[in-house]
Every structure is written in structure tokens, then in C-alpha cells.
Length: 340
Ligand SMILES: NC(=O)c1ccc[n+]([C@@H]2O[C@H](COP(=O)([O-])OP(=O)(O)OC[C@H]3O[C@@H](n4cnc5c(N)ncnc54)[C@H](OP(=O)(O)O)[C@@H]3O)[C@@H](O)[C@H]2O)c1
Image (cartoon, rainbow, N blue to C red; front, top):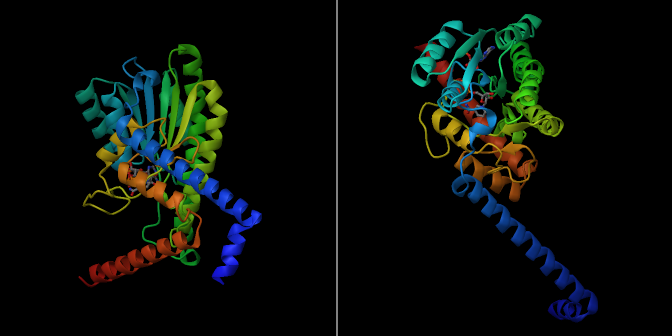
């Protein structure tokens, strides 16, 4: 056996094979090293994104959806802190008004609010946004509103309302809000010349990795991934940067996680990392117009993509096991609460 290997090794074919394997191995190692350095550079060494190019401190406006809680509320606060006026969109008017008045008094910017239920695809909702932004120089849109499953659930047992709401909110309404706001952004960029536009859309690890027991949410976020990258190509020549923001868990009402950790930041740290990294891929090195900006999420994304890959059976199985276990715990908790 060893003699056969040795003679193959000595043959011209064997030598060519070894040389090829060495070149391919070196190429892979070097490209892994360079990409890893790019992740570290984007996350820790590069200068933060300067929002002046998106109209900060120039009286221009940002529109943020899902702005009354969690990540969206932080986007609204941190964009206002950078000097953008903000239009806050979500479901609950009272929450929006309270946040708007806090933002105005804290950051001396202007605000407007638009309240509607995004699980209903009603033309009146887009008209309400259009009316609120009529005549305003808008440069930024943050497509943050989103819904997931209340708990992980087999696709075949997913309630029709939950299925419809997820697709309506995450996809139909997000696309139609973009069709409403993006023309105003391109018109502002054309008129002002010195500014660029920006459209950020919240993606998720749920969309990055096919996620059993969150199948509808997973599909809806994967849809946003493709759509956002396609739109990025279309709007770049018109001076608008379009970027999908990929996130693993963040402590919020949606994730039902209260305690933060190195892998689960609160909305404040998550949004700070996101706005700091606009235009940088961070953990999403292989993906155009995509960023995985929070440091631990970035390393997770990078290592999954550079090892087993997001579409592998290993990743699918691990993800399935994790969500099976979350479902079991959620069902036990619900049963306990029912008893009490
Ligand atoms: N949290 C995570 O672990 C995580 C991870 C990856 C990606 N994401 C994505 O990040 C985005 C924000 O998530 P989050 O965790 O910040 O959620 P959240 O804390 O639950 O906040 C959701 C926001 O969306 C609004 N909203 C929900 N349903 C709505 C509806 N039917 N009509 C209008 N507004 C509605 C809420 O308004 P009300 O206050 O009026 O309810 C609230 O302002 C989502 O797109 C989500 O998929 C989250």
C-alpha cells in the first residue's frame, strides 16, 4: 500500500497532483487569512461611517419603521443623535408620540409620526407615509419592522394568521414602503448633489441559515436578502447605498430575551455597531451590499460561511436542534403559566 503511494508520489502525475494541491491549499489559506483580516479591520480598525454624507446636521430626514420599540427605537434615537430629523413609523401611536417628544427634546431635531398596522397591506398606509414626507428632503430609510413566529413551530402547524402576517409585514409591506420612500430619497439626492441616500433593511441569521421551525420567518428574511442586494445594484448609480443588516439574537420583545451577553447585545450596542459599519461587510465578507456588524455575530457568520457553509446539512441540523429545544422550553413555560 505504502509502496504504491510512494510510486504514485514519484510519478509525473503524482508530482503534478501534489503541486496543484499545494497551490490550491495556499490559495485557500491566503484568502482565508485576508478575509479574516478584513473582518477584524472592518470591526475594530476602520474609521466609523461618517453620516454627513447621508445628510446629518444638514436638516435632512430619515424614516424608520418599527420605531416604537427594540432595535427600531434605537435606530431612531441614534440617527437623531447624528443630526437627522426622523419620521417614526409603527403600530402604536401613543408609543411613537412619547418617543418623538423625547427625541426632539434630547437632540434638537424635528420628528413626525405615522401609525398603522403593517400586517394589513392597505394603500392608505403608504399614502399616510407619503403625506408625512411630502416636501421633506429624505435621505435615509431603515426597513426595520418585522415579525417572527411567537415560538418555534413546525411549518405544517404554523397558524394561517401568523404565516400571513410574517410575509405581509416582512416582505409585502416592507417592499411597498420602500417603493413609497425611495423615490423621495433619489429626488433628494438629485437635488442636493452633495449627499447620498441610504436604505438599510434588517435581515437575520434566520434568513442567512435555513432555519427549521422558523421556516416562514427564515424564508421571509432570505427573500429580503436577495431583494436588498438586487436593489443595491439598481440604486447605486442614483447615489443611494442599499444594505442588508444581518443579525443573530438581540435582546428585545421579539426575541423574548432580556439578559444581554457577548453574543446577544441589547439594541443600543447593536445599532451603534450597525451605524458605525455602514458600507463595511464585517462578518459578511462574501456578500455584496450586506453587513454583519456586531462583532460576535460577525465572527459567527464568517466562521460558518468559511467552514461548513450556511446551506450545509450540518448547519441545518444544529439549527433544527437549537429551535427544537427552544420550542420544548417555550411549551413547558406556557403550560406552567397556564397552571398558575
Ligand atoms: N431581536 C432579535 O433577536 C432580532 C434578530 C435578527 C433580526 N431582527 C430583526 O430586527 C427587526 C426589529 O426587531 P426587534 O427585536 O427590535 O423587534 P421588537 O422589539 O419586537 O420591535 C418591533 C417593532 O416593530 C413594530 N411592529 C411590530 N408589528 C407591527 C405591525 N403589525 N405594524 C406596525 N408595526 C409593528 C413594533 O411596534 P409596536 O411597539 O407598536 O408593537 C415595534 O416598534 C425585525 O425586522 C427583526 O426581524 C431581530
